[in-house]
Length: 295
Ligand code: SF4
Image (cartoon, rainbow, N blue to C red; front, side):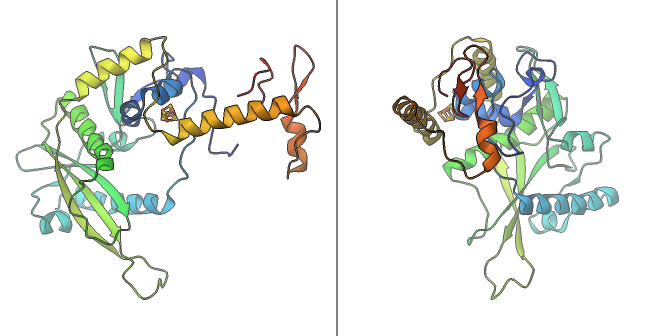
C-alpha cells in the first residue's frame, strides 16, 4: 500500500461522524456511481486516489499569485480584456477560506437534508452589475486551441462550476449564470523543450444551470440513509476487475495449501502473514484474518 492511500478512514470522517461534510467531488462521485459513493462515505473506504498532477498544481499556484496581484490592484486581467469580459477578481474577506478545497470552501447547510455542502473555488470575479462570476483554472496540453468543452466527459467540469454557483447563491450572493474556465494549454509545437513550457491561454465561457442540485441532494441523502447497497454503475472496468480478481484469488487459495507466496521484498512475507486470533491459522495478505474469507 502506498503512503498516498489510506483505505480505512477514521469513522469521524464517515457519514454520521462529526467531521463528515459533502464536498462537491462527493456529489460528483454519487452522480457517477451511487455504489462507490456509498462504500466511500458510509462504509469508509474510498477509491485509491490518482497520482498527484504536480505540473497542474504548479500552474494553479502561479495563476493564483497572478490573479491575486490583480485582486490587490483592483485591475482587470489581460485575458479578461482580450475575451471582452468586464470583470475583476473579487476582494472578499473569505476569499482564502472559499479557496481552501481541502477543509473549507464555500459552505452551506442544506435545510431539507441537513447536509453541509461545500466546494473550494479557484477564483471568483465580479462584474460592474455586482454579479459574482465563478472561475475555474484548468491546465492541459492539447493540439487544438481550447474554446469550448463539448465532450461527454466534460459534464463533470460543468457540474463543478454549477455547484460553486449554487453554493454562492445559497450564501445570498447575486451570481452570474456565466462561469469561465481559465485554460492554460501547453503547446508541443516547438523544436525542443529548453527547460520551458509555453502555454496558450483562453477564457472558455459556460452558461451554468443549477436546477439539478436540489433533486440530487435529496436522492443522495436517501442513499446515505438506506441500508441497501446501491447497484454498481454500468460498464465499470474497476468493479469487473475487483470481482474477477476476488474469484481468481479464491480459486487459487483453495487449490494451494502448500508453500507460502514468493515475494520480492524479504520483510514483506512476514508482514503479510498474520496469525488469526480464533484459530492461530496463518493468513496471507489477501485473506481476512478475522473471518477467514478472502477479499
Ligand atoms: S461500478 Fe465502478 S464506480 Fe461503481 S462501485 Fe464498482 S468500482 Fe466503484
